[in-house]
Image (tube, rainbow, N blue to C red):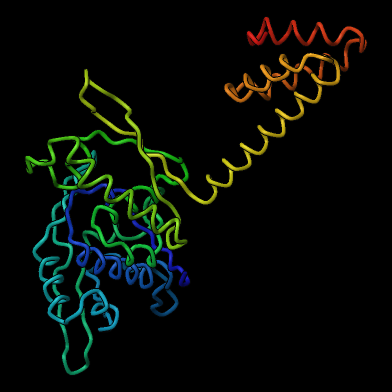
Length: 321
């Protein structure tokens, strides 16, 4: 995997209402990267004063290979930048309502072969790390994703990665993806098939190939009768996978320790040992507690009393007979 460039994107922007095409979104990823380079990673000096200029429109220059790699031809970039100029960003929260264009002006200097993009100062706070909470995501991954739904879900998962999960009502999902006006997406099965499953499949495939740092699985959160109202989205990362592996390994080792204790004191009853082993595997959440109790009993009582005590504890506390 190529060296990653980490981007930051404010949560309001991640949760804003839009439906970009993949090429438009990729153009924006480069815009966000340049915003960070100019306004976050590099302080602008003027005399003895060091400050970050967030009070005027931003002009950034992009090389052709940065944008033309997003499409086969220059006209693909032109089309994407035109659409970005036409599109509006709408943010509506407790503090304010804002509507503006993503790109105010886009120009291609054909002699110098450079693109210049003008971004409104109104959205600069939403493109840089000015809020305590923000999204981090990899430019490498962002530019790899083919589906606009994968791009949006990748940003959402990145935003909630430290929490491990997030939930969305289906109405909220349709709203932020701008799908609520399409009759097809009112059908939950179609929303799953055309949007959620597309994103889940692409992210997991890239994750399995080592080209993405996360993917998600999902499950029903709320239902109204038979109608699904919301989903939990569980974020899977290398860290969570490793933690699951450790937990499984730890549980297996604890079961082995329990069986060793019981075999030491409960002799000549292989069927009982087998029933115990099956019960432990069926109820792994009890394993740690059982092991702790057995170790205490072994330490507190004479060895001759341990066998009946073990049977009593397992029968009365865990219904293992």
